[in-house]
Image 1 (cartoon, rainbow, N blue to C red):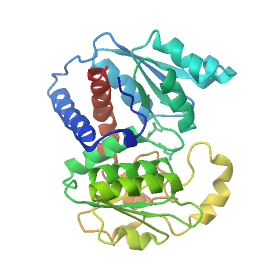
Image 2: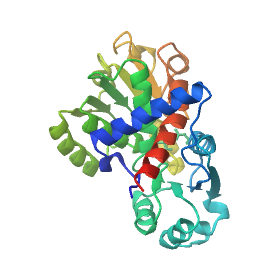
Image 3: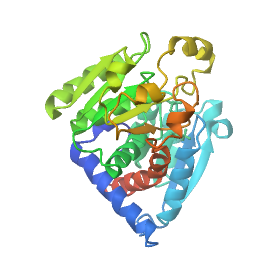
Length: 306
Ligand code: CP
Ligand code: NVA
């Protein structure tokens, strides 16, 4: 049995297999021929942080696959009152066929997975957001950016950055990360992904200069400066991230046909300007839609490996 906790655990082939399946599922859905791969199965979804896309895509995805999803928030489940992850994991495993968790620490997620006897999916932690990257990669492919792309990530060294670093290092493409001083990616993830990059031929570089990262890029992406759980740091972060907005001036340094990605939710005027977000290079709603198709593929893939 497999879990889906980080892209670290997946091979290049695993990622390609899931993406291939996602495109097949998407194509069938558009034709109204959705196969019920997970008939009568149940997905338990645990949310310790807010969500729009992740919740809607998993819940609708499971329904379209012939199954059912249930939503548990930490506020109104016993997790919020301190029931340990390891107990919750064993209880839910006795009833559900699969579990998706959005939580704070990657360690809590991994603790849950260690005790679970059904597949567990990472729906975002402070460290990683791997399901988002599958949707992002699908969107790159749909817009013709899968052949040796240069991807520029501008902004906070956060869960999205780390997931981009894993995707690049597994698939072997060039990723340039530009963050302000003090907001660089995690050192352990840097070390691990750079080691992986040596094997795959990926080129991952880090800079404090957003312009240097974006020059001639095929894909430009960013994320909020204030991730969930960092709300108290908002005022300081807004000061520290000055000059890291993806606006038209920065975007003009990328290739003319570059695309703009953002996992959303976006904060206009902070990490991205209104003009870029709503501009012709922005493919953010294709990207958001692909969450549905990619995650359906993850669930079917995990079910196949049970
Ligand atoms: N991108 C993303 O995961 O969005 P939600 O927080 O709305 O789920
Ligand atoms: N980095 C953001 C991603 C939201 C989807 C956060 O963790 O809040």
